Length: 369
Image (tube, rainbow, N blue to C red; front, side, top):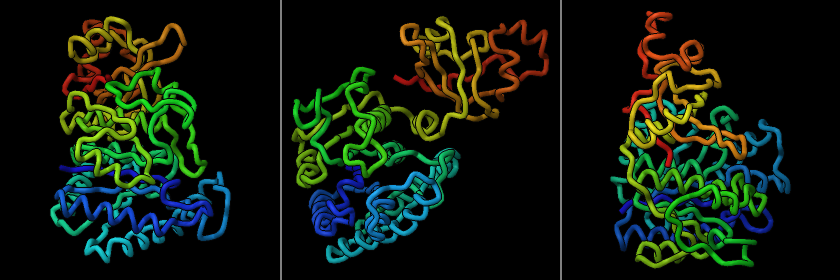
């Protein structure tokens, strides 16, 4: 069995904002037990670099300026790794640090290299790979925005059986947190569920709230991974879930995507979008066809051939776009604007040098359920 555990800033730090060393020590003991007694491959995705930097400098408020957050991350990241190293060393386990940005997943070869590196580390039963976003150099254009998303993409890339997103609440509530019931099992992430979820971090320390966790769970589900959103302070819950017990909120997996299509859908960042009509929507969603230029109503963003673009339809009620698919474009945005809405015959007549009528071939197109 292979599991990915994402641990948030609010779980890693105490009330003063400093790293919660007693908790990290207990967490390491729980991880050691899972590895040694159940022979489970474990990958940690750890937040907390900026939080640890804040605590070390005795600051109480996270700055808004990017350069200041990058500086705090560069201070806090070695502190976190030192805490993990000291916690796992008495248990005869080593830690390995992997720092990533969105760019690392955007390129197919780098994506494969990341997966190979993690798999190689997991062959050594005495090593715990610890992954974090490289906050000290990441900019808005190449960051994930939160480690919930990063953990889901990692889980998809290594084909994990389970993803645990540890937070400071017991799961997704159907109303006001801690004053209503936990939603025990989710078979599909719907728009209604996303509306229930809070968009912000409840502690104010992290970057993502419950909504980002559900979006991460949706990514994991599409890759065949079961996700648990649960309280990180209750360490035994991971072991309970592995033993088949119900904990927190459990999000069930969907049909598993092939590795390459999982990368297209979630690993690569969309550089633009195309708005399609009703006929094209039916063709790609229900008939698994390629996206043709004739079905495109509008083109947005600036992208090159081979970039990932989002395929959207218009929600007539809210007058907003809904993403229905993602894929690798056969055209750059400038050329696609020229042929959008045109039939194959029109393209051949007006633009004889254009590549093909398929804007996204079905082999490079992933429907977002």
